Length: 599
Image (cartoon, rainbow, N blue to C red; front, side, top):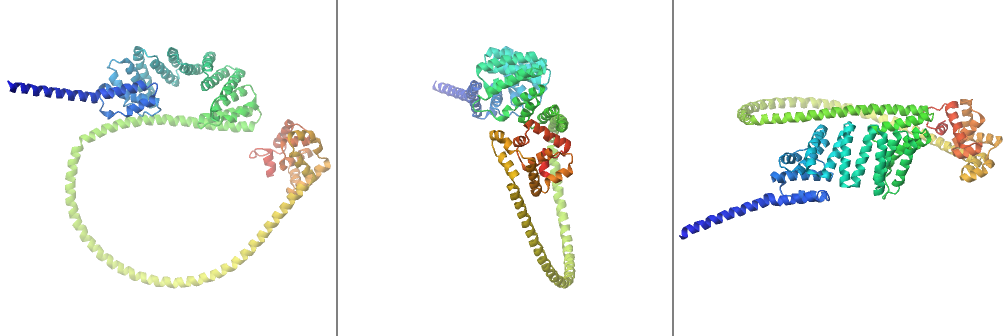
């Protein structure tokens, strides 16, 4: 009886050992990784960086199978997006999509379709992304998750709007707004209303865009969100501009700038460029060209062709409105150039998309070709072995033949080298004689060059003395010019502050005799500037010549206006008439002062 009992005990022990091993294997292969994946899923919304760290600590994730493999694929893709990491292809997320399509879990099925759509959109397959978002609509509704539904309709609406059927995109964005209100998340509501307002603008429904932007503004003001409030003010200003309410658009932008100044830390100047742009366009439509010209250069010229073309188009309208036709024409030419560049860029992008599609098809064909090559690999190896055997036999045969040929060539080479050595010896003797003759000629040439160098040194000394004389003469002219009474009075007046200039301006105005003295001093120290100017441009009056002399001296515009007894506006008008009507200044000179300094 003892023998059968012992067998039973051994059998039971073996069964228990196998069960323990099975439980341990399941614990190691499924339970422990599944617990880590569930922890990563619980951290995903609040702490995505920690979730990514938990996923990266999994041991051998490529060994995961079934539910764990699908959940890891979904969570890793989700973590990459939430942490701003690039996802290059859909090979990982498609594992989750295939699994959850039949797993009976609508929530994770919807999430996997949503993120596969994200990947398709980011890799350029926009049609595939739209198809996946549409497929995610049904399981998302079954899951009943407001957050998932909000994100789905938000991204879906934006993607549709990018393809320009704005009505369909607006429908999806309004659905996203519904779920954002269910979540009671103010930031989501504000962002969605901002995008809805943008869609209304694209649909040219400007009143609806204005109303939507104002509602979002009230929420942003209540939340004290500076960035959202200022962006919505800019959006509202755009809607008001399209409806012709330019004064209200300016008020909205000014309100945004008040909030910008409250930002801590202060915003970078580049962030303010869109606000300057709206102000510039509003002033342009109000025909306040000076203000528009002030704000437009503050916008800066963007790196892309769109920004550069828009900048030059605005400057063309401003300069045309101010009557500066030459500058307006120049800006219009640059605008046309950038529009041509933009068209070329669009063409290149289209060609790049076609090239990408072609490369993908080429990649598929390459895979087919590689499979065919693998099937022929064995035959190729066999042929190669036979070819190597034949080659080795042929090589031994050729090697013996080459050895005999090399010996014959070596004997012929030695004979040829001996003949060449004798010929080189004769040439060397001839070259030695020619070298001696060249050395004698070189000695004679050196003597000639030595005499020529002495003459050059004497000439250089004379030129140096002449340069020193010119410099002393110029210094004396400058000193003489500064000691002139009229020049001294003008310089003294130019150095006063604005209040003193106005109070004592009449004291410094020159009489006719003092002007004559000033002309004489300028002629003496500036190469007869006044006389050459009168001869070259006889239409200039005495006052015009006097004004040109003051500009040549570098006197400020305010001081010149006081010396002439006129306002600064009248001075600008007179300078413009002298530049364009009397002097006809060439276009390479940006100002009258530059032309006079170069005259």
